[in-house]
Length: 256
Ligand SMILES: CC(=O)[C@@H](O)[C@H](O)COP(=O)(O)O
Ligand SMILES: NCC(=O)COP(=O)(O)O
Image (cartoon, rainbow, N blue to C red):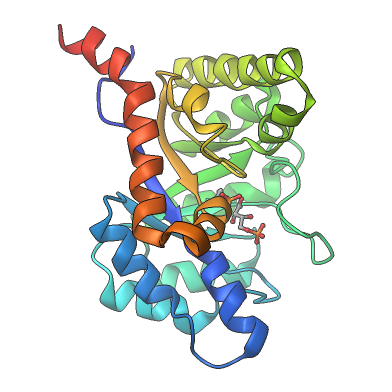
């Protein structure tokens, strides 16, 4: 069944911390970005506490939980250390992502199928603590099947390849869009709540926002970059506008 709810926007504030950490010290403050995101219409805040702490740090997570009312989507590697941190802070959601120290950004999705036995106790523990568990996976049936079998209520489809395809011509872009749309429909048929994110920009957001099964987008790097030119508030409001524009025909169809 297609749900008619508004598409949620989670603003990822990692790269405010990237800029802060380039100099050390406290500025710019990711918490201020989270406050601005809330005022600009974000539905949630996403923060990825990488094992190497290259951007968001432990103190940021503590402060986000203490001072920000919006739901926190805590992105984390599948490690005991991260599970313990999640259990301590009890964010609204925990999105388990693959991590490699030497990567520049999150390359590809979590191998939920291959790491089934490693992930199963973590998904159980986080879920039992009332944290909504999400798996950041590629748009592949095997990964969706594994996510469902693991009992994760949510998956986030990695849109990195789709976004890169924007620069490879209309056919390649459409091919990747179709892969995401097909995976979203398949995942929803398994009972999974479908989110998507990674690399989304003004150029690439609308076709993804128009996929009816997708309930939430998490967007960060582009927004923080765009904020340099137009301010964070304007950047988020414009993203929100494009998402709503793409979503309107679905809302109209389900409410009429
Ligand atoms: C999992 C994900 O897509 C985001 O957390 C994103 O990865 C953050 O940026 P970095 O990959 O640069 O840490
Ligand atoms: N999970 C994806 C995310 O949080 C944001 O990714 P990006 O927009 O920073 O690439």
